[in-house]
Length: 129
Image 1: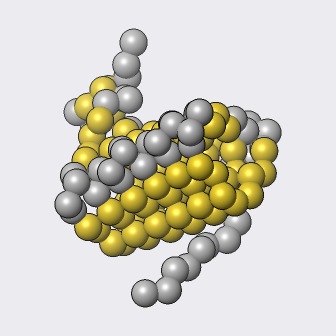
Image 2: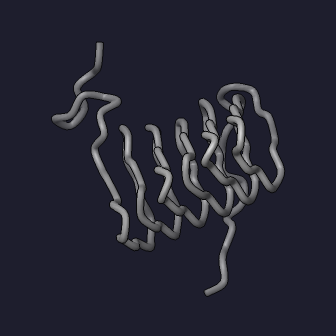
């Protein structure tokens, strides 16, 4: 069963950045957020991040888990797992105990496999304008 958390059930989609939207800054959450637009900055969450097929995330992603069907440029640190769908593109570094790469996905970078509980951001990646 789901656990209640701030009026939503734990695991529910609590936020959405739609196609055509651009946001820059720091995004923090505890449940699930989906990005189908463009987000540049830092994501810090205990929950799950879903990057839709049209989504683009640039920066540092430190989450419980992430599913990438769009593009991520930067660093992903996931305590649980990282899943790259067939349409997904990861350009950068991944640190996680569980990496799943679907047929057709693109992964151009480095991966460090961790033990569960070891995931933490060790450095911040910066991007030029």
